[in-house]
Amino acid sequence: MLLIAHRGASGHAPENTLAAFRLALEMGAKAIELDVHQSRDHELVIVHDFDLKRVGRLPPRGSIHLTHFRIGDLDWSELRTVDVGSWFDERFHAERLPKLEEVMDLVEGKAELHIEVKKGSRQYPGIEERLAALLKRRRAWAWTAVSSFDHEALYSLRSIDSRARLGYLLGLTQIKTALKEIKELKAESLNLSSRQVDARMMRECRDRDIKVLVYTVNTERSAQRLQKMGVDGIFTNFPEIRLP
Image 1 (tube, rainbow, N blue to C red):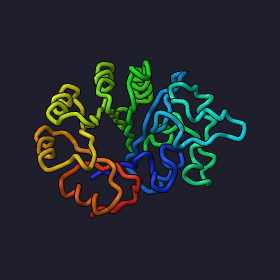
Image 2: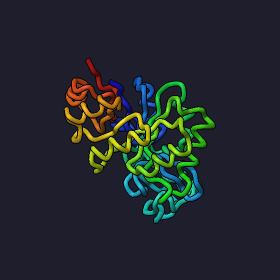
Image 3: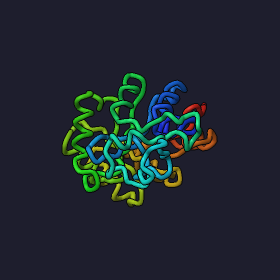
Image 4: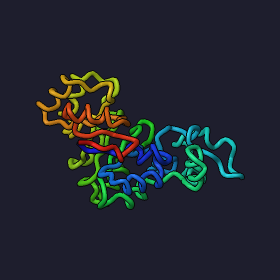
């Protein structure tokens, strides 16, 4: 069973930062997951939330309102000034939002990359095209998979590049609909919560040769239970979890 470092080693370092990704690799992670948004000036930026209220801290002379703005309303020159490490621990005060390509530079040749696109073109015009172009230029589809709860974004990626490796995030979609769309998309995995996975769903996926990836699993006991069920991979904040 594959252990996927959820937002990096986010149990030990601030999520979705280069510090968290480096630590995950040092811990031996074979796969890393991250979240992608698009800035106002079309940079692919790594952060989970749609704004910076939770993880952002401003520099001394920064705009007091900056952390209230949504990612898509800010240019990269503004986003890069925000401290996204101190909320976790003051030791990480120098951490800034990374661009996707910075993380690719770090990860390439060392681990798989699992990218979650938070929203497609309805919110971030052209994000699928930019992402697909970057992955094509970097010849990264061999070691990168893209998932989303925004299934329109997955259909868009499939239409752009037939080589795209896609993961279908289940969310509130009914499993019957999900299986139909996974077939249409030629997606390789069903990604779902640990609360959603059961023996019947595992059978449905096995019968269709669909991988099952489960989030977010942070104890060895839970990980071992899912391993016994036949789950293919788990997203965890603690990539040092040990399995039999």
